Image (cartoon, rainbow, N blue to C red; front, side, top):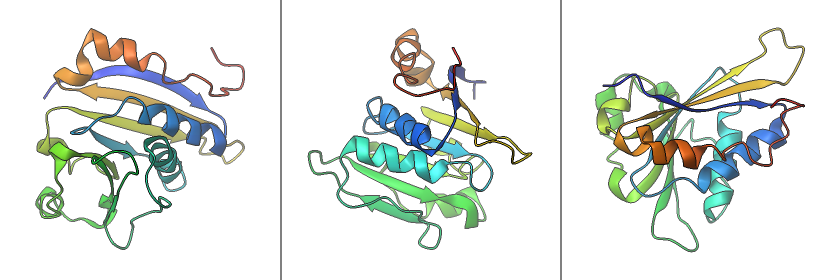
Length: 173
């Protein structure tokens, strides 16, 4: 596996900005895409996923799948579902594989997925959300890494350059 390519590094100042980031990300995703979301509790993984769900036009609300492990959200205008997985309680990559998710015909977002999902596909995004550990601010630093031919190409770098559009980064460039 390659080391990946940094597609974006974005300051996110609050929950609204994290939701907007999810909306923007939704425009870049298609069937077969897997997105791993990594960050501490309260970092904004589910908030970003709600934005992705809204951007994809899912039916109903997107909520954390912590206790059911995976939720499939149908979309009003597409047969491509959004599958939201919480891998926190999974014990091994084999347990993730046992979920029997149709990766080729879905867009899959996996919270706590690092170390569980990478072997299931060669093309994926790994999004790291870091927050201020002092608790003094809501600032998050979001880094998007792309893996595999689909996300390591020059075309992907161009597409993802617009990921921060419309997001208030608190004066950041």
